[in-house]
Length: 131
Image 1: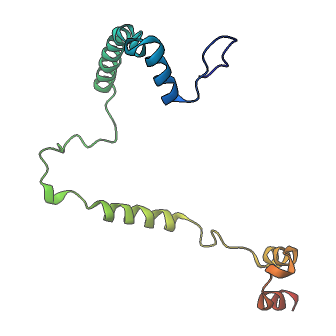
Image 2: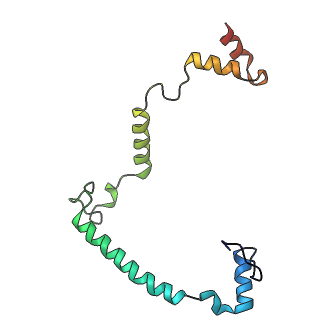
C-alpha cells in the first residue's frame, strides 16, 4: 500500500480491504507469510537488548535513585499523594517564572490595538489608547 501498484497488480483501498482481498485471493495463510522468520529474528534481538540493558544498568546505576529506600519495603502511607506532588511542581514552575511573564508592555499593546480592525476594538480600549 505504500508504493503505487504497477500495471496488473492489485490495488488496495485500505488495510481492511487489503486483508479481505489477500484472504480471498491467496487464503488465510498468506496473511502470516514470513511470521516464523520475524519471530526467529525478533526473539534473539529482544534477548540481546534486555541483556545489554541489565548489564548497563548495573555498571551505570541511576545517580538520582535513592538506594537506601527500597520501594517495596516502604509503607503505603508514606507514598506522596500524586496530586500534591503535581501541585507542588506546578507552583515551583510558576515561582521560577518572571513576574512579568506573559505580560504585554503598554507601548506594544497600544500599537497592537491600533492595528486591529475597528470591529474588534472595544470602545474603552480605543479611548484609553488614544488619550
